[in-house]
Each structure stands twice: as structure tokens, then as C-alpha cells.
Length: 486
Ligand code: TYD
Ligand code: MG
Image (cartoon, rainbow, N blue to C red):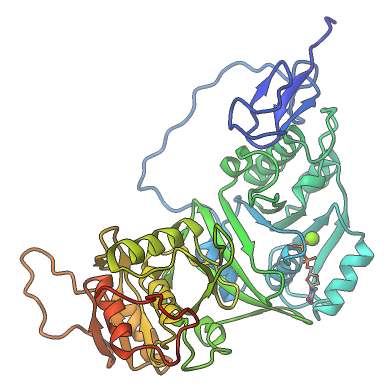
């Protein structure tokens, strides 16, 4: 056999080349290229190499009967909703998240719920295969979660060939968890488990089997520092759904979010709370996110947000403090730093609010990550409130997008947001002007679900509101105008 040359593969995007380089040509990542066993000498996967004659494929019409088993809902509503109503047989789902965030705990609870009570025959057979923990450790966790009686079968294995052979055996399982895909390996490849070729080949093999035998496979994937699911992006293309499990370490809240879903929506979230008895569902996240809010403090505004179909109210906190640094610090948790810079620039350039020489901290309380531009106005309200030391009324919710000229723009589904706010006892709302579609008669009064609606057309009006009331106490920087314009 001719000598095969080494192959260098980027661990982030999967691009291969014949020489090593410090920077990947494919994705531009630094230090991501690693030498791997050559492809030529090792066919990826376990595929049978039989040469068959070609056959004609069969086509079917679109309106045929819906085939296959229905979705399997596990009964944990927060999980089922993110999946789009339950697990689709024959599908592959990737669940990513930081180490220790609770992926194993969540999946153990999900399979236990799917397996049903001990002795049930209607439920699908559920297997949990771990490459990271021994069976005894898994049992310990199950006991701690009060799930020791659930008819889930546990195993420790890392060789995909063994797993595939066992899964292919006579009785087809319903649900299979692989924890984690980074520990799995295919013995026809020389590279170590966790490398891009191994992750890809192992996933390919397991997904192919799942499609062929009609079981659902749930793959756990670790996440790298920069928040990507470790291993190749190609893994995300191979699976039917990608769920990410997020949360701040110090907080007990965990959020499950679908970033890709072939069988459901991608904007739904599931909210859980990590307790000493496992993950508990949080059916009403707003109440929890607002639980520790103190009324009548400056720098705090309640944002009426929307996560998928669900309204979620969160508190946005801002702190503006004098700085001795040449470049004052700007720190943001739970929101986009670029978006904060934009809101600050608009406040400065369009409303004359001097923030350049001051440190700015922004925090979304409770550990939720807000990605909606609709939070702009709430962020601006928190900032202006902090800068002027004038609280936003405690009974007020805020939402609206801000444009670069300082105009406040309409956001989607204001009614849903207002209804949730009313349900939680809020009585006032600061909102963008109502958008009237061409040909539509403007309504006399916006539907506010009983809330007192205050429309705000420009950020200057917001700044003016706070300036009119004046600071509660003397500013720390006499002579410096903190709030102006308007
Ligand atoms: P785990 O599911 O092992 O995380 P992952 O698989 O994502 O790495 O969860 C680990 C953390 O969860 C660990 O720090 C302990 C905590 N935990 C609880 O707080 N309560 C529980 O009931 C369980 C099982 C874990
Ligand atoms: Mg784990």
C-alpha cells in the first residue's frame, strides 16, 4: 500500500488540508487544526463496503397517509414544547451545553418520564448509554432524582461498533441517549475520541441506525469556551434538532432553547430550576425572574419580552458610575454588548446624555439571556434611570426597539406582552407608538389588557421624563450635566 499522507483537520469547521497551519483556511479559527488519521486508509464509519448494482428509487406523492408512529411526549411540558410537541421517532437530537449545566440530569429525567412507571408495556424501551460515568454513578443519580424505579436500561460504553450491534439486535429500542458524543469512537479511525473525524463518524453511524430502526437518539454534545458545540459544525447539519441548555453557573435557572428543529419551532424556550432533587419545571418564569426585584430603585426596568410563543418578564438592571479609567468599563450580562454600545451611542448623540466618561454595567436579572431587540427601550430606561438616579415606576413594564436616530419602533405581539404584564399585577406600560397598517383605521385606544399605556415615539421623550423629575439626590459629579436634551 502506498504511504498515505497525514491529514490536517480543523476541529471547529471540519475543513481538511494536507499541511498544518496555525489558522484554519476554512473558518479562520486559530489553533484549531489537528493532525488526524488519513481518510484513504480508513473508510469513515462502519459502513459495509459491498458493491451493489444500482436500483431505481421510488417516489411518492406528497399527500399520502402520515406514516410512522406519532410523536412521543414525555410529559415534562417545558421539554416537550421545545421539541415541538414531543420526540419524533427516527430523529436525532443534539443537546449542547456547558459542562455541569445539567444535561445528563435533564436527559435522565426525560427518559425516565418516557419509560413510564415500572412495568408499563405501552411505553417505549429507553436506553441510557454513558461514556462518561459508570453504571453505579448513573444509578446514584437516578436514586437522588427519585427515579430509581423507572424501567430505563443503563450502560457504559464508548465503542460505536458495540453500541450499534447491541441496538441492532432483535428488539428495537424507542429512545436512546448517548452521553456524550465526544466520548464515542469508531474503531476504523485512528484519531482519538473527541476529534472532529471521530465525532462525525460516530454521530453518522448512530444517526443512520436511528433512522433505519426508527428510534430517537439524543446525543449530548459538550460546548467549547466560545459557546459552540465542540467538534464540527457538521454535527449540527447531521441532526434533526439542536437544543442548547444554558444558564449562569451561580443561578439555579436553566433554559432549554432550540437552535435548530426540523420538526418544530426554534424560538421556544423551556425554563427549569436546578434543585437538590433534579430539574424542576418552571411553568411561570416571569414570576420567578421578578421574585427578587426591589421596587423603587433607580437603574431597574422590567422588560416585557417574548420567548417563542411565551411572554417572559425580566428585570433589566443598569449601573452608571464615575470612572477613573481612560476607557471606562462597559460590562453586560444576559444581553448583547454590541446592542448596549448602540443604545449608549444613541443616548449620547441624540439625547445629549453624557455617559462617555462613566462606567456602565448592565445585567438581566435571573440569568436569562435576552436576544430580542425589543428590549432596547427597557435597557435605555434602566440606563437613564441609573444616570439620573430616578427610579422607573415599579408598576411599569417597558418594551420597544430603538433605531439609530433615536426613534422608538414597534415590536411584535404587544398584546401578548401586555396581557402577561397585567396578569402579574403591572398597571402601566411604556410602549412604542402603535403601528397602523395601510388601510387600517387607527384604533381609539390601544388594547392594553387594562394597563395604562404610555406611548413613546423618541428616546428624547424618555430622557425628558426623567429630567423633568430631577435627581433624587445630588449627583456625585457636581457641575457635570448627567441628563440633558429633551
Ligand atoms: P450534570 O447533569 O452532571 O451536568 P452535565 O451532564 O451537563 O455535565 O449536572 C451536574 C450539576 O448539577 C452538578 O453540579 C450538581 C447539580 N445537580 C443538582 O444540583 N441537583 C441534582 O439533583 C443533580 C442530579 C445534579
Ligand atoms: Mg454529564
